[in-house]
Amino acid sequence: MLYVNICVCELLFMVWSYLFIKTYQLDGYNIKTFLNHVFEFKLAYGDKNKLSFTKRMIRFIVLYFALALGLFILINVFIFNVYLVMLNCIVVFLLCPILIALSSYLLLPIEELIKKYYFKKAKRKLSKLDIIKIGITGSFGKTSTKNILANILEKEYKVCTTPKNFNTEMGVTRAILENLDDHDVFIAEMGAKHKGDIETLARLVKPKYAVITSIGEQHIETFKTLKAIEETKNELPLNIDKNGTVVFNGDSKSTLKLYKAFKGDKYLTNQVGSFAYSQNICIDEHGSKFDLILDGEKIAVSTKLLGQCNINNIVTASAMAYILGISKEDIVSAIRRLEPPPHRLEVIKNNYSTIIDDSYNSNVVGSEEALDVLSKFKGLKIVVTPGLVEMGQEQSNANFKLGAKIADVADYIIIMNDVNKNYIFSGAISHNFDKNKIYFASTRKRQKEILQLLMVKGCVILFENDLPDNYK
Image 1: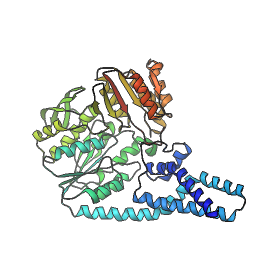
Image 2 (image 1 turned 90 degrees about the vertical axis):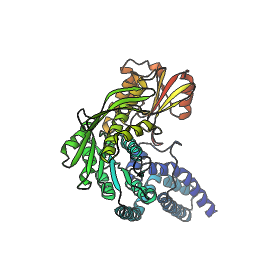
Image 3 (image 1 turned 30 degrees about the vertical axis):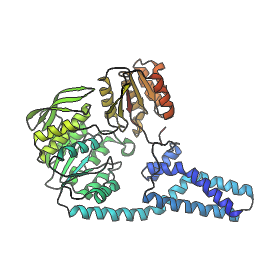
Image 4 (image 1 turned 180 degrees about the vertical axis):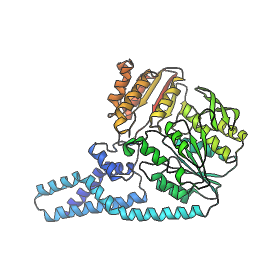
């Protein structure tokens, strides 16, 4: 009977723990962030993000459930009153987040040793390769600029990039160890949530070339101030090869500030009169046309990509490609062939409606850009959004403004986030939007039901941002 009780308790505990463990993984194994989400009841309740059974997660689960099993054995062996056993089991269930934190801290030395081993292994591998190394960082447009640059460079070089938006220390390390082979160019996207993150990645890659994209208040929740973000992004130009070159996307004040402060070889883009910029822009539902001014020469360019931000990313990537020896003719040809990346202003058409999938976007600048793109389309317009997160004290104001801007473009709004819904709603109402045309959906099933109710032939639906499971 004792063993049955222990097995039942452990089984129930495993089921109960799933949401907590998945939330812990989604939070990047960061205990502080995880505990904050637990106390705010932001658990990974949905099915958008699955628990990934990585080697690290398997090690964690083994220790976590071993500790839980030990507790259940102690409870059942030393407590004889059935009600006290039940009470203690309930206490263990309630202490689940604390047990996760304990397991994490116990494993921390091992994980650090493993991380250092692979970090050094990747560093040694890179040091032996005679290749062009490029680092890309910024708040917005990192992944898009990386992909555009890779497409242009592939005319002359064999290019390896960090996959998708894998831009953490271990993400870049894995890309070097698993993907980098007989390539000519390695492009590393470098992300950060804390000071020192970019410096660590720069020490790993040791790039000779760098691209700084637009900088703004992304991850302000962890950085606290825009100045801290600027200083962190500046870790890349400060840690490139001494004979290296940096291209700065001057479409943001912060990036422009870093450009002016940098003392090495540098190029500025997206400012009139700079090394590369765009003019005579025409954007419609079919794509974008503009004149690319590159090194003083005007070139007519067309692309399937939509939006001013994408044009700015194209200009910046073109500048770096030109510096690396790609001809202007090949740059224009590559731009023409560019395909929109999945979930980033990706237009999907069928016989009944048009979908603008911008679900991988999660920042103020990108949201404004998506709404501007939506305004270029004809037909009834529906915006589906959970709003913006990780904005710290600015979150309420940012979502109020987002609601106001949606109101200027859309015919209907579907809000998917309980935290932001009142701010988005109030912002839309402040611009005289009909409150009867604002809907709330707490589940994807409900979202689908509302869309089926609102859709008409020829309508356009913008999916703006799509949050992880730990945001409602």
